[in-house]
Length: 469
Image (cartoon, rainbow, N blue to C red; front, side, top):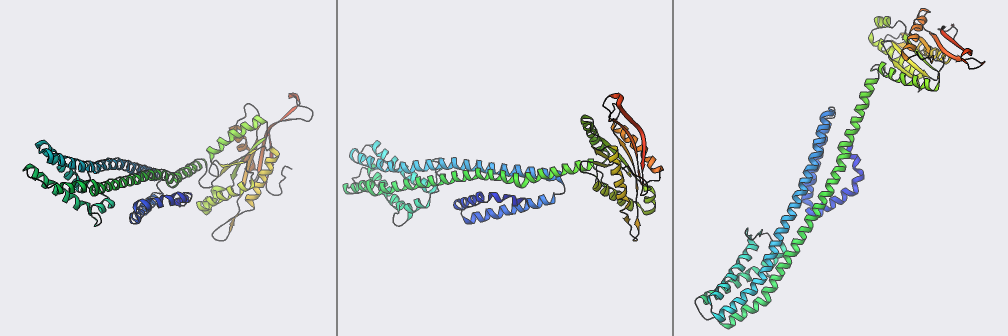
């Protein structure tokens, strides 16, 4: 399975798992894991269903891979956006919470000034400070869109506001009510007891200021933790994208490339090989023959060609059916291949016709190879369904390369084909050689001292017929 290729990612996956568990909690992680497993199983089912349709599989895998990366990129963008928004909200919240400390001191200052002067403007300043302080307080608790306050506060702030040991909310409400009472008295030009003013001023300078400082610190700590967590999630998302790219390369694209490579190899094999016998076909044979003959001519190495034709093959088809005929062709291909060397080129070029290229092989050695092929075919009969056996033979025409300017692959094969029928007229189950070689004599290497043997036919046949030694 492709998923087994992810074993090397185990340390990274373990680190990511621990990181998510720390940030999101176990319940969210279990839900995420379930969704991921379901997605992977669905993708596996889709790929399994499309495994026999490579084009659709490639398209689906490509779309899935891009969708995963796009989804994770969008997720990273959302996280960045949340970091920015969280920073803005945190800045607004901390700013208002800090402003509350300043307003508490301003209210005390304006109270003292208004009591002393009884001036309408001082009284109005005192009222405005109390009103702003009250609005900010409820904005921090309940939210205020104009002040960019979300109305969400951490547990530490909630403890300061509502826990019995602090009860800052109740203290602030009582303080605001007291100040509002002072405002009404000032507006009505009523006297205010100095003891009450002193008590309010002392409370403002001590308990209230201390509690408001605690709130600001709690907001700052919570905001820093949230931003740090979001930054950690952002880093994780980048790491997850990289991991997804690696996983896609291993799980999706690498198998696709391998599959495409196999399809390409299969297509090349189908284009260059005979489907029945699995040996090279006529097209592949001639492509290879040209290069082998060019090499032989370049290095002046001998090279020979065999033309093989199964004897009475049409009669075999007529008498035993095409299934036996196909088995005869396949067995001939197997036996001939086993007889030849790895560097020899063996191909089916017609119905029952096969050709062989023998690099670095002269006419005499080519005759030995032809005799071996004849013996291998003759001594391995085909077993029929009725328990009988069918002995098959072959006739072979041999020609060697003459190294002349007019000599081509087709001309050599033509000479081999001509003497092939000489072998058939000679009784089949044998070979015939048409040698057209130019060899140097023992006396020297001048042109006058070279001897040519043109179209000398030498026959070799079944046991009892002399072969070339």
